[in-house]
Image 1 (cartoon, chains in turn purple, cyan):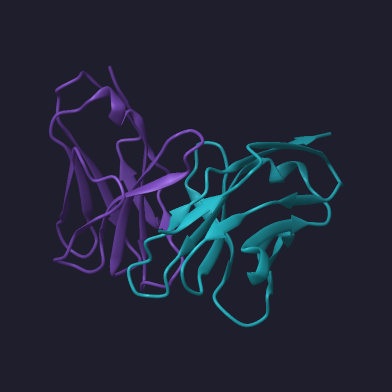
Image 2 (image 1 turned 180 degrees about the vertical axis):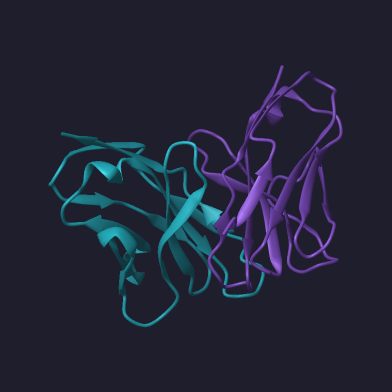
Length: 112
Length: 114
C-alpha cells in the first residue's frame, strides 16, 4: 500500500535552474495538495487541486506552477529556482474536503 | 484570516511522564481542528481530529485533545510518554467547506529523556 509517493527525495539546484517535483497517489483521492515546510513556520500551502482538472493557489504560490495530470498525479514545477525556495516539499491527498490529509515523505530541495 | 499558534517550540519530557502540547487558533467560524505528528524524515501522520460533538477527542497512540471554544484552544495530551513519541507535532485548523485548505502551526518538537 504505497499511499502518496514523491520523487525525488533529495535535489540540489543552482539558482535559475528549473525542475519538476512529482507526486502520485494510489488511494483514488479527489483532492491533492503541495505544501512547503520551513523551520518554525509549519507547513504552508502552495497550490491545491480540489478535483481532476482544477487547480488553485494557496498561501505561497509565487515562483511555482502545478499540473494535475490525471486523478493520480499532481506535479509542482519551479521554472527558475531561487535560494528562497530551499525547503522541504510535501505532497498530500484527501478523499473529500473534510477528510484527513495523507502525506508523502517529502522532497528536500536545496537551491544554491 | 485563520491562524494557529503553538507557543512551545521545544519540549523535553521524561519517559513515563505526562505530556501536554498547547495549540491556540484564530478562526472566524466553527473550525475543523487536527493534530499531526512527524517522525524524522517522514511525512505527517494524523493523530486525531475534531469536527463537532464531544469536545474531548481520542486519537491514535494514546493521545487525546480537548477543544475549548472559550479559550480558542485545542491542546494535545498523553498521560505517559514513550520514547517512540519523540517527534514534531503540528496543530492545524481548516474550514468546513470543501478544499481542506489547512493552516498549520509552527510545530512543537518533543524530546524524550530516558
